Length: 288
Image (cartoon, rainbow, N blue to C red; front, side):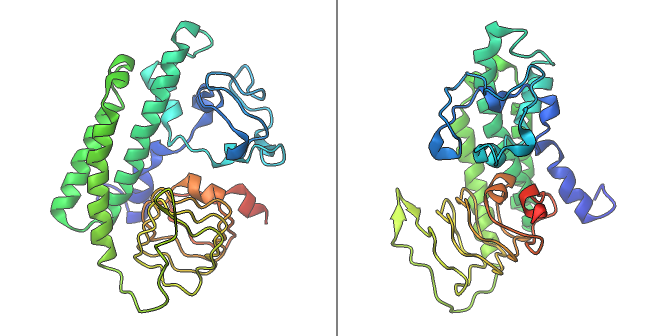
């Protein structure tokens, strides 16, 4: 172990996978499209700068996004892809000074975000796994993915991202299955898995407090406005789960699997909510 204790090691793994907007060129404010259904007051076309984006790439209403109806901005997370593209891939050259490269930069940003998201999940999986063979496979794939993030713009665009994601998903699934076997479960009320939306488990608005969710796979589940207060989510696979307005006040997510900052930012928590040390408490929670 390189660091003085495990906590330092855990945080270090995610150090370059957190947003640093000061080193970015406002990619998420330009490259992405916004819609009113995703927490924005108006629709915005991809490639068109947000009206609040300043010349220095700062946001004029950054401290008042929710009040201005841009809740979607507080939920978005590029996993550090923005600063990687800005400072490494393009070596500090921004799309305003090089407009001929703007469309390419935006496409590269989209690809880089996917790679950084994979790095996030692989990093978390490495912390969870005790099986030596699987641990080595995860570290090897993490290294391979990191190398891909250093490719030139043209090579990134040509990358078969779907194929690489399939490799990552395979190991993440193995990690989840192994992790779930470590969590003892009782015979409390189980989840109704027959109710789905587009193949994803529908738990919208459901009171889940009487259900033992430890070690349960909630991959991609709709947990919008679900009641998860005081629940222990140890070993619960939350990859891709929609936690918008889910009530996680007092819930324990310290040992949940595949939880991201973006998911936490969209949920309703408080000072009693327990999070993994590599995640930050949203400002909206602290204010309360």
